[in-house]
Image (cartoon, rainbow, N blue to C red; front, side, top):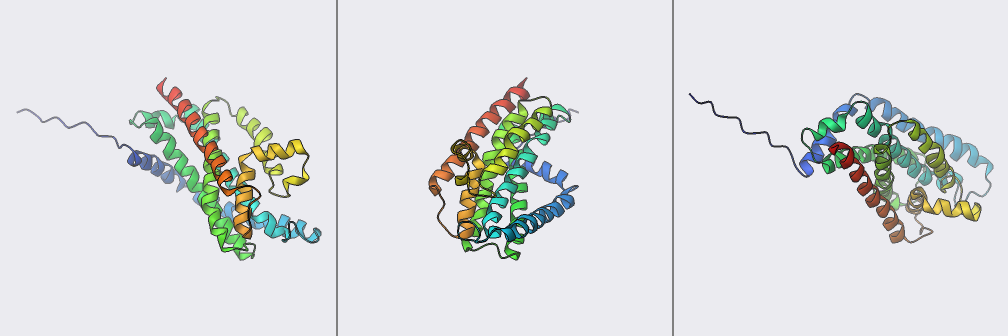
Length: 266
């Protein structure tokens, strides 16, 4: 008797494949989410107590017509989104290529390079979303949100997270040692966090440093989040901010896709 052959397995395509990759990271996250949730509450609480109330007590008259706490909260939310996005786009990406080889196993599934990249980016945005929503809730408890437009901070930080994560994915996939990741934090992340308008207006900086702040995606995210949180107009055009962040996201995704394709196809 002839045994019927089993039809070949059909791999998911399109958004189904992206969802499958995203679910893989969610399953792994089930083991560590408790620690991240605690830090997500502790970080905004301690930062607002230390900077907003502690340092703010020594700033007479506030900044830009509002209290120092109200001024820095939207900047801190944007900065937290950036740090979460970069943290999830550096060592995890390098590990998936160099140490635990997850990307190669996913490519053998088979999944397309775009599915692997988009699924992991979706998880990074999920982490950015969770951290930002928790930060917003803590800020609301402190009365630091002065406008209903503060709800617009959520999609804004997602765009900022993608604008940061996509190019960092490209960078992390192009290196073979985590020494280069430490270098990234020293020469890019820390200066950008300090001088992109999170803690003080960039107009107080020298002209050269001011324009370096304008080039960074964080300043555009900070300006948009601050405008939404305070219910005022941003310093630059809203459309200009959004297009600039979108350009970072698109260019970063294309670079990341090219690097992923080159490494997974070799």
